[in-house]
Image (cartoon, rainbow, N blue to C red; front, side, top):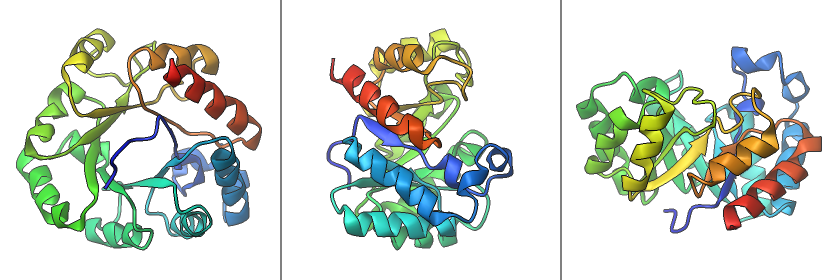
Length: 228
């Protein structure tokens, strides 16, 4: 269970076997040591939050990281391909602090189905949340017990549905934890400008950093912005 969400969470998308990302992050393919190097650099920068997909290689690396740094907080995602409960069990090996439903099911599945998944996982003593590209549509899930959500927050409105203005108007009225994602709009925005802008609207954000050269400066800058 997550009592206090970290301000900065390192995303694991660059480390997965996703076909969309493989071509951009070939240095991590079948290279757990390279993944671990980036994670350790993040910890040494003061990052304690990590987002983990139930990819077998990624889970094994995070298992080692958790042993070496037991204070870290890990949020796992389920529902992005594969069998749901098999993904849950993969993440359970890590003793994750939170589990989040992926937007690929949250944004299309009936609310009753998502509520049933919540009830199925609610006895595991972990925080349960969801990711969504449409927080206006999905916020009803908070009424079923979900305690946090990850949603796009960026200055160009990239993947912010139905519109950037409507999302920003809604944020002050949500009492649950909101974690901004797609902050840099998949590399379309200057990272410094984008992080500073997003920090004015959310107190937590996930950053997917695949280049070790960018870890220190990006995480340190984001943490400084979120302290203000």
